[in-house]
Length: 362
Image 1 (cartoon, rainbow, N blue to C red):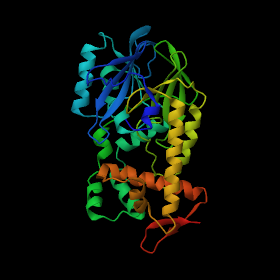
Image 2: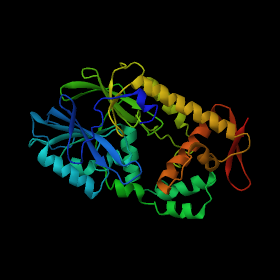
Image 3: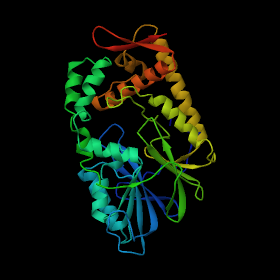
């Protein structure tokens, strides 16, 4: 445990649910954990014992009346191992009851990947924000200009010139559709501030920005529980990147502004993150995240005493060897910090004769 983690209270100690099993974290609320084939090797998902009016479930299959079952929050990626884990849960944990609804916090593959499979299998509606649903549909369709090859000219403009790495990135053209082969053709929209009844309690929608287009966290005052998604993680900082589809974005500022939306929650809120272990110490963790970005921004300013591309900044912010998957996030995050400083007027942006964009102190 690192020094920052020691300031948090891990509510369930070293407990980690094995694939295909669950751990109760509150009455009727269960934690499950699915594997990921990345350096970040897991995602936490949530299962809530629920009762819904099935007369109009949003996909035309409602038979009328109240129905007992389950609400799923986030899905895991689309692969055989994750489907097998879900199949085991269906037969051992659901008590013979159906999945009634699938809520997805945001459009990243580990959260939305199996949404179409789950919704189709159980004839259950998908609930998402409009921004996240639209991005998931668009990315899974691999439209020209938003598929994996779009990142190449974007990253080249920001200083990535290594031929071997560019070749690896070229091979990621179908990265998103491989993990998210389909998204349901219809959804039910959720919005900031909305109260959603889940498991007999009201959960307030808190949208956040910077990590994803319109990320949803869910807070239940009755249980004093926050399902934070990727917005507040206990061990790692949430990735905030500038990508090709929105090349002038300022996601660090959006993310820091979004953290303020949790300021009014109780200090002893139980936080259920998408990665890492459930913890208490929300306000402490938010302070740590603010400090983290303040320190990274200061490092970037110092480095920009001479002109620096985003690729030049990557080793300043990430002092370890990165594979192609990690590099896409690292370069996007380096650019995000440069952009905040540029928007703040601390840095100015220059277009070099070599076509590479660099930043230097104003």
